[in-house]
Structures are given as structure tokens and as C-alpha cells.
Amino acid sequence: MKETNITPGLWLRSLLFFILYNLMGIVHSLLSLAFAPFQTRLQRHHFVNHWTRATMWLLRHLNGIEIEVEGREHLPQDEPVVIMANHQSEWETFYLQLLVSPQATVLKRELLWVPFFGWALALLEPIAIDRGKPVNALKTVLRVGTQRLDQGVSVVIYPEGTRQPPGQVGRFNAGGARLACQAGRRVLPVAHNAGDCWPARSLLRRPGRIRLVIGAPMDCVGGVDALTTQVEHWIRETATALMAETSRAESER
Image (cartoon, rainbow, N blue to C red):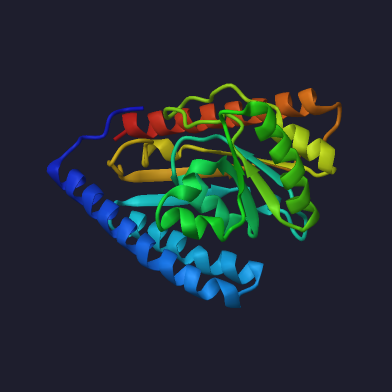
């Protein structure tokens, strides 16, 4: 990816986003906790995600980041699915909640200990795992994930396990495909280039366009390994195409 010109204005807008984003998160987390006892699961998801909507508004109007979604016709209607996406940023962990709700995300349990943010996150009933114990983590994903799917709640899994640099896709684990096959559900593959604008472990928010592509749902045909390979191939191919389009657009500027 071509490096964006890092100007004082870019740093200032990025810092302002960081401050406003966190202040909104603290206030909204407290409000979410206060209202949660009086809300249904769907109402809680909708209310908690007001912070997500405000964050996307900030990104567009403060940081010059546009969002384009392709493949909305593949979003499930009245059908819980296992969503598998590449992992580059914090952005996708927020935005996917706006596309499919309710949902339960598989995440490391330490996130629930973060003051304010973690407290509100717990209201969404995520699937918290101990990554230091991979065998137990997989058992938790299969057991709790199946329960959530049976309750009509989609499950989000990032099969790379950790965030990758822009333009790269890490090695996939088979947990998401195993859950889909065990629960008799389909996998919804998702690919994006969020790391170009919201890089992991960075304060910078670079102006540009985040593109997210939703693929056609995939059935468990041929077993867990075959489904894992099919999803990984689609995500790698789509993510590579997004990277090529980004590079081409930047070279034409």
C-alpha cells in the first residue's frame, strides 16, 4: 500500500478521533449498563451499537473515511450463520455488528475486563475464550457457539486469530468451519481492506475508502477441512483483489 502523506493535520484529526471515540465509549457504556435490565436482547444490541454508528459518522466527517459495502444481497434473512472474516483492524469488529444483528463474536476474554468498553461488550453476550488454552477454547466455541446459533444469534469468528498487516491474510484455523458443520449452519464469508485506513495498533486514521465484500453463504459440503479451504480461498482471493484496487487507485492520484 502506498504510504499516505503524514501531515500535522492528519495527526491532529486522528488524535481528535481517538479522544472523542473514547469519551463517547465511556458515556455510552454507562448508559448501556443502566438501560440493559429493561431491554430485550435485540434492544440491547441496537442500543449498544449506537456507539458504532457514531464512530462511523466520526470516521467519515472527521477523518475522511468512506465505507462501501458489496454483496448485501447475501446477508442472511431470518437465518443465523457463522460469519468468517479477515482481521486487520478494530473497524470490522464494530461494523459487522451493524450488518448482522444480533450476533456473538468469538474474542479473547481479556477484552471483557477493559473498563467501560468491556462492560458494554459483555451485554452483547460474546463468546469469550482463553487463548492460552487452545483445546478448551475450541470446546467453548463449539458449545457456546452452537447454543447461540440455536437461539437465532449469528456467530462471528476471525479465523486468523489475530490482526494482520494491510494486504495480508494469515493462516486460518478450522474452528469456524467446525462450528458451522457441527451446528448445521452456513458460513458467510467476508473480506475487507479496513487496515488501509484504520491500521492495527496505530493512532492514525488515514483518509480513504474501506471496502467490505460479502460473499455467498457456503454450506458444509465435504467436511470441515473442505469448508475451511473454500472460505480461506475466497477471503484470500477477495482481499488480494481489494489490495490491488487500492494500489491502482493510489498510483493514479
